[in-house]
Image (cartoon, rainbow, N blue to C red; front, top):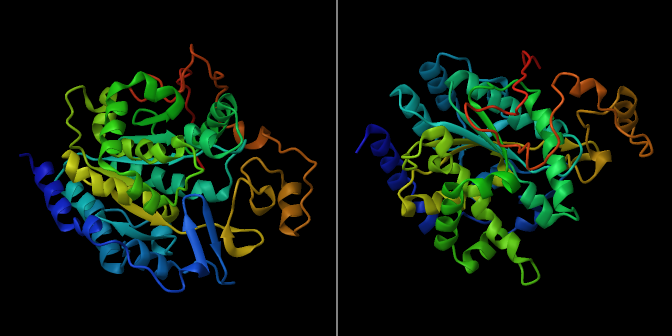
Length: 373
């Protein structure tokens, strides 16, 4: 057993209580709803994150962890950490152990494309992930869940894929390491990678319908695509889902570190429950708070409500108008300012798939600017 496998075994044994002890719940749980599809709080102060930590069973990021982060990496913690924007975690100490022992790991985050452009709330995890990639100098995979948006939204499959390309432009503009970053569309990548699909099947076999209903609240009227989707979001947590990155003989033993908003935690609680049963290390997580909607802290910015959000393509006039709660919905957003930073990209087609062979090319143009924010 390698040192990395020993570290993973320690984490799996220490955190096995996730599967045996369900997260705590409060009697006044109906004061707020936080799940992957809805964030609503009845309080004018917004989401109670202490309650979420208790409910989800995660751990608050404390000064001791920040001090260890700086000691191990030699980098002052990002201001998102110091200011509590990233506030909760699972097994970050394990990732620091790996880094300290010079053992490999990788980053994984994602985006569900449902709008022409991303808004400021979407940007938070990507800005932080870029910083983590710079600090740790590790590979990053970014999952574009166009399949999820096709299943949940009133979108044609072709439109969901087109929005993936549009949102990928915003992501690329953050300046990720082009040689260590792999962005992929679920619609395009899964059909070309048997290893990824095999992991999806393994995960699906480990989770019962009753369990997935309990975790995600699926009902009898939900399509079967929704019920099976959690396995799709879980699969990138395991390194052997990417043989073109980690090698054809990779056994899925490279640990994964996931920065995400805390509403995505249910997916990865399920993943962490399944991982030891498949012989994989549990993914570590670090959770962010939500970017409040313009109307107030009771909910987050949402692509479904343009008036709640400031999009990366909004003009100064649109931003000012939204700021005084008199949004002009007749003015289409301009894509000139933000998208000038990146190259013209090929449109989705069989000849130009979004997922490009290694070394980690984001697009076939292989054109990459300096990535200043």
